[in-house]
Length: 179
Image (cartoon, rainbow, N blue to C red):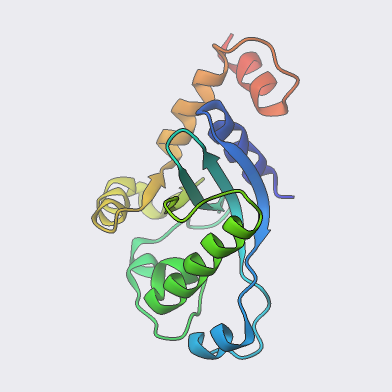
């Protein structure tokens, strides 16, 4: 498992979510044909965060990109009929619709959701191209998606230092750095 995903998972848990990592969505052969990719592997959601009191599930993608240029708004705004690139769930409406619909069906079959459960797509970015988080946030908000910028993540990690002791690497690191 990716360590960045682990940190984001800890932050989601701190906000009251139950988190599942690397959740595979069971798209059918017919759905794969609808998507336009007959032989794709099962789509994988980096983090599923369930909040039972809100009856919502965050389908969260975690992109650290710490030693790269970072998440790029131009790439997020691309639109593809057939899914491609790094941000398939964000750039292919048809793919997103099929995958998130199947995700809800899979969760209902596992007794982890019901027909009224709301699924929200989200992105956590460890680095953003040219430090331009706000235009990405505005774009994501316009789509009713959730965005955690590097600044948001830093604030949330800093807040971990105020929590009671937990044997979690992210919390321990936050406590060491903030003292």
